[in-house]
Image (cartoon, rainbow, N blue to C red; front, side, top):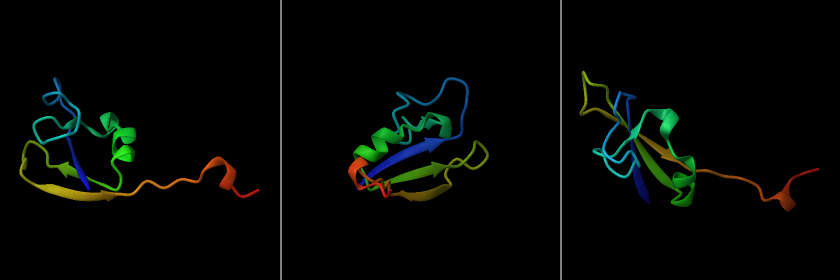
Length: 74
């Protein structure tokens, strides 16, 4: 299972901003790369605290599910 990180949006972002570590976290939820999460699913996204409580995390387990086109119900 892969772990990704997202931190509160801020000017300048965090490192490379690719979500692969706390230092390179996605810059707010608008920057989350759901395709990257899907490619490594199931995955865990750690939602990191704000500047007042930077060490607090909420762990979100993400399971993306979908139906193939030929499996869609009519």
